[in-house]
Amino acid sequence: MSFDNLQYVLWLPSWYPNKLAPYDGDFIQRHAQAASAFVPIHVLYIVKDKQKQITSSVLVDQQRTGNLLETIIYYSNPRFLFGITDKLFSLWNYKRLYRRFINELLLTRGLPWLVHVHIAFKAGIIANWIKKRYAIPFLLSEHWTIYLDEARPDLNELGFLKRRFISKTIANASKIISVSDYLGRSIKGKWPFVNYKVIPNVVNTNIFYPSDKKVHPVPRLLHISNLSYQKDPEQLFRALKLVKDKGIKFTLEVFGASRQLLNSLANDKQLGDMVILHEEVPQAVLAQHLRNADVLILYSRYETFGCVIIEANACGVPVIVADIPVMRELVNQDQNGVLVKPESAEALAEAVINVLQNKNQFNTQSIAETVIKYSYSTVGKMFLDEYLALLAPGSAAR
Image (cartoon, rainbow, N blue to C red; front, side, top):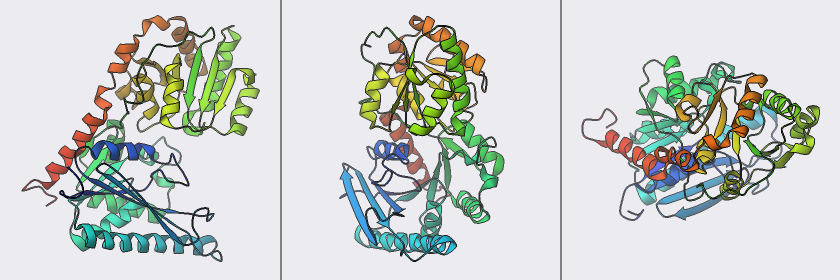
């Protein structure tokens, strides 16, 4: 199949990797790659260049990889705009550019089969306009933590207009897709009419795969996050201090955090010489580090999924995670990881010690096999099935 002989699905993500933020919404890009093996996908994403690093007006960047066409449009506001004026002009500019490029797209390529929104705000604004003007139905995939009551911020902390746009997008979507059952149930709890389908995130097993691990005299722990409130870094570093106090040596490699915050946490717990910081890195580089790790730790207060969990497992590496609802969908106790009582440094320290002292209890190949259901082929086919169901004669979306 190619763009030349088959209708396409238009993807409108609210987050997507770009030159200003190379890892922003990269899980959505991986979804697009998976789906494009079954149907042509055209991603259209517009991002504001606040600092005018790329353009002082409008710049279009387009790339095609097989059946995936990605169009990234950068725009900036005039320099004399500030505060609320800048925000209002930015929203107007965002909608204006989307409508312009979508109209041009429809003239050159014709109507898409469907529109697929990823994250309701703010791409949902455009999907609602397309549905009203062209009668093209749309699906909505959600990843955002704001629907979780325990999240900070949660839905109620958003502004009135954002909440209104989100509600309108959810109400007008022909199908809601959630990356986890827990997230889907959280959305349904707020909009009881919602019927959702779970399509999980994907892992690229051409990049993440097990291999013979190098033997290291000192165990290697990995943590991948920005160390925000969501990731509960205070309990993580308290736990590791308890592990150190037991006379157990280890190194902790952290990917994605700010150096200032990491140094503060590490030095406060006298862990500075045991912690190694890495910036965000491409997946191929991350996979190399994972393959040489003994365990990945993600002790979050809340999550909607956990991409780093399935990436570690694909490399045959066990995980230690907080026993929160979504992790029970990903981790089978003592098979591909360990579930630990949340918000307890003592419980986490005990789990780390047990895993390090009993590493042979985990089978690398068995762990890697748990991620088959997150493969590109499995997940891509799930997207195709949803598209075909909505396009079938008699579907409510028709």
